[in-house]
Image (cartoon, rainbow, N blue to C red; front, top):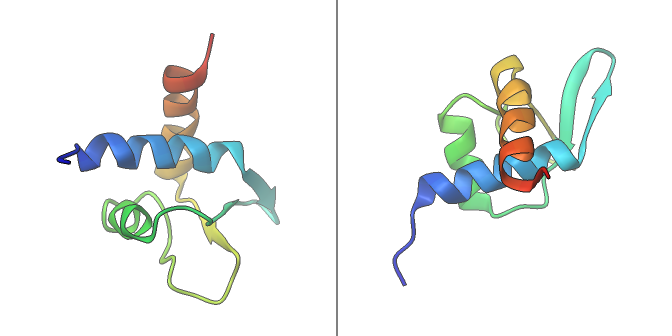
Length: 77
């Protein structure tokens, strides 16, 4: 089946907001999502490199802002 990777990336970024937290002033989120989508989000500048032993990933300032916007758009009432 063909699918729109950008829509997948938006959904994953929105879900990263759902699992996000701030630690020492840094926005982080659990990285238990599709690895291809996580790599694309890294390439787009929304998250730090997901290829590490850490169980969470750093959201960039732009990524944290956009994750909130997408979460509200996709899942808000």
